[in-house]
Length: 347
Length: 218
Image (cartoon, rainbow over all chains, first blue to last red):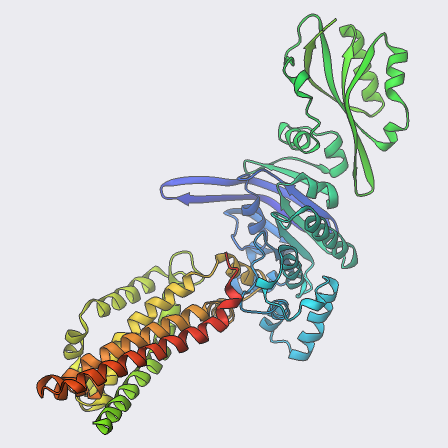
């Protein structure tokens, strides 16, 4: 549905040249919710703006619904944008228009007759749960309601794709969940492809099917959310997940943690596993099969969408060779292991 | 005396409101042109921006009395006279247009870029952005700019009065200053103060009707 091929963006700041996007290639399928996760300054906003040519890429092509935007004239791009809805971090509503008039705005541009506009706007306000706010002005709304108006406006042209720029940034927990729920609903009801950028892993976990991690203008990792969450490959992803789940090791242990192996140390391991792997009591199996004891430091279950992933931090007490065998054993059971470090034996 | 004052007031109001109307018609498009052709704006065009900006600045740099006398040939060409309140409309308009255009440009530049971006994202053309987004969103501040322009026009019209435009300025100079009727001076002062207050109040009233909607703009 959306295919980005070698997108590059170069900005000139005075006589300095900044390379904000360095060859981004992504394919987003029809009907999926695809998340791009990245820290501030990774190039997320620049990337999402290249997709509808608000800020065209310096090199590379954007193909949406088999239409290559880079080959279009300015007028044709305006036409193409009608099929690409977009919502923004700061809502960007027209302050002098009511909710109704804001949602009607894209339809007015098409010179649609007023009675048709009214019918369509009412349907959109219904969908976004704003029917009682039609006559309110943006200053009378809270942030969640403003984002709902922005979503209704973005849907007015019946787009095939919805681009979301940090759509839940700055909203409180309840508002955030309610906006994410709405995005999920319109994705399934309207069969709309959703591409969102965010720095919040929570957004990725609650609604995305697939995720790509953007770091310093490059996609460093890309996977289904479950796979990515249970088996992160890059340091950027690992940091995101660790910070979010607070599965960072307790301070008492952290103070003694060594990054390199030494004699007389125990291994600290982070295990992540999906529901199917958790059906076997693998800790018990390890203890039975190897002359080791396993000390559970932290464990919790992460549930997202239809799936759950278990995260566990354990201390492996035993001989080096046996510990290594146990790790191989766990990997065979489809349990992802990651060495966090070593601690000296207390006993 | 009352008859003379009312007559002068009528002339002043005629000059000011005719010039004000023309200023609105000519000045707003110039303000829009300045705003949209500036660097990074929807119709960026450095050449047009620089030329218009230069002209506006040049016209504003002369003191009004000098400007008014300097363009007498132009006024005479346009109206066929260089005295009287109809002729005065020409220099008044020409002086107010650059002032109003600059204030309108500022008002338009204060709109958050994100709002324009959102309009672009739903497929609005530059022209649609101008008349459906920029002008309506900036209207409260443009109305305030127009109010300021009217107050300036009253000031200019009294200066014009001293060289034959009539109105309250003319009455004060000829009756009050040259003929030593100080009561004429006092009466003019009172009328001018009242006039300026009425304009300021109406301007704020109209603008605030719109501004309350803008109150949460960051």
